[in-house]
Image (cartoon, rainbow, N blue to C red; front, side):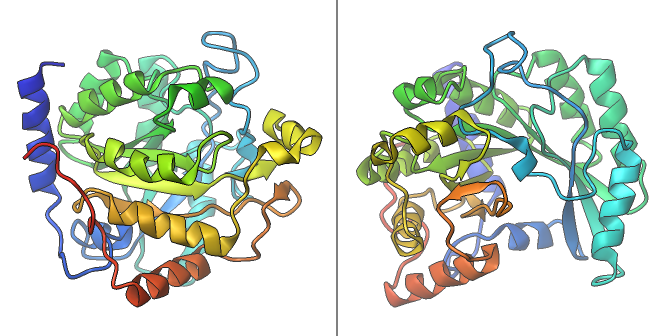
Length: 329
């Protein structure tokens, strides 16, 4: 991408996401409140997509840490239509907030890995469900052709849309080790192409992958801040039954550093302090079903860990971007 164009994209994203600097960090729910005058809930969907890292197009067996069963709520089954999954998801949440609206979250596997006609049909089926006000599409950075971006750019003109990319690490050695099937350069280029279309663009990383020390992870915050990302999700490395990484851990646990909840909270705060101040932080940890989780088992729910981070940030007089270095000044 042309350097000047990149700076233009970056400046537009920065301006688009102006935030209240009095907050500890930019929360995703506050971001949604700026777009919607009502409460909005994401509903996860399994649209039956595969992954080029599983079917041989890029690789076999998938990423070594991946078991998509950890993502899906009970109502997510591929034999159910998109509309039925949405309706069952709505029923799960509606009793708490009758006036709630919903974002269809295409989460499992690579949700741009199909022909354009099939993708359009599934996205538009979700949008046809009553009270669905937008889409969140999770995918890989090597699964975004320009023809699909053309369609998403048009869709983005009349519906709320976020495209989330699994970046996972900025270290190519790590990406090879976990059989990711793409480089960081591919992720960076795709993020830039997507943001250039005016689409909210999200990233996802895993903190604690084997071989990555704390200092490198803190440096990663600055590397990602140079991308025109709108949102960012973090979560801790979890070892899951039925994955290659789970087998690796069982054979040689000394090759892994699994953070305690206290250690990880401090790492997250150090990371937040070096993140670009306008980035929206969507999540800090993930909860896998106990029957699938090998380690670490913190016994904490997502909101409990978030409260821990907030409390510790107040104790440290910490805030997002405290030590951020803007390399574009």
